[in-house]
Length: 517
Image (cartoon, rainbow, N blue to C red; front, side):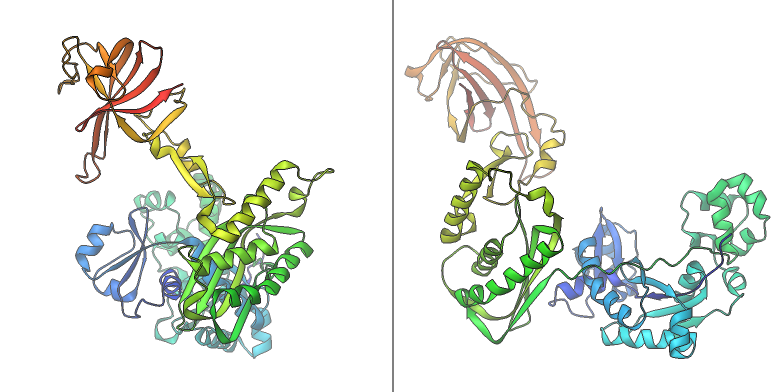
């Protein structure tokens, strides 16, 4: 067994809620907040817990307990991004920090204790640093091993610091419930065997536990007995690839901001190149004089150059794409953050250059820079049952969206081969019987009469004979939503000229969705 390391755990309660509030300055401190993930509460604020909201509740139950509850989606990327400055500040005081998860991090106790004159003094200094970062409720726990230190941090009470003496971790952990191990599969079995506390598990023979529960049981036995041999693995601080520029006095024109950002954009791209990287996803953060922050992530099919970065800043400032150079509020700061990077070797030009595709890209990008981000669009295939729903237009230069939705199963969608001509607006047509009456579909899905004639214009005198047809195939979507519900029947039909059509019969009559040319 490895030697047990004396460890310090710093814990920031309700960190996901704190990160969400920092991203949205409009939220008041006393607002009851719940962050939802997969339909259940992932985290909630103290004011929400006072009204009975708990982690794991479904949204409706949480809102019934607290009608004023502010429901927000949980964003793990935002969680980690907001925690990065906290880690950097702690590393300035005590290098060798290991982040366990956003809001909780671990470090060896020996170095800080020797520097600050004791373990408790070191914890107090680290907590003062967190207070300066706006985290007055942070807690610190010191014990033998990361597990015991984490439990100590969560049981500090009003003192905010709890130090478990060396060799006393087993006695400290003994009365804690067995669920503190966090082993969802093993905990119910241990309870059925009568082991309700960590002390009950630690009292068993270690070899017997290993034979009965394997390596996971042996590891749980070590944790319960205060023999956590996990080492502290300091993180390697990431390279500072982002760049910021501040304006004093603030700038209130788009052209002024973009001109000032150009030098920073060149530094941004140059720093990435020096590190052997290129940026493929860029986040632009714009802060105005009132303190409001506008964030947007921009995608690129290749890599961002300095000119591309300047264009994205201008498009974000213009908002809707209008060419008005004025701004609603003066800008005091612009930040450039590489959200996704790639090795520069994957984006080197070939021996003879990039060819025609590169010239097309530069030409269309030039048009965008003059007319706006959404002035040049390209079509991609998304998900959906209708043909028009699958046509997704994205601005040129952005990576296609909706590819994951396109790969998902869509029961009721049209099978391959797809029609070559899809009408943007379905065209009214007429489908007639031999007597000239309109063909209908009964509630049982049967035709009122065989299809004999088809008019692509919807006028009876343009009707032509039908060579063959197939259908109906019923499609019913969102029956639970009265506003979005849709029901129709699809048909495939070949007229006397040999032209194949995709038709649909809905409450409004017959329409042609597409044509097989």
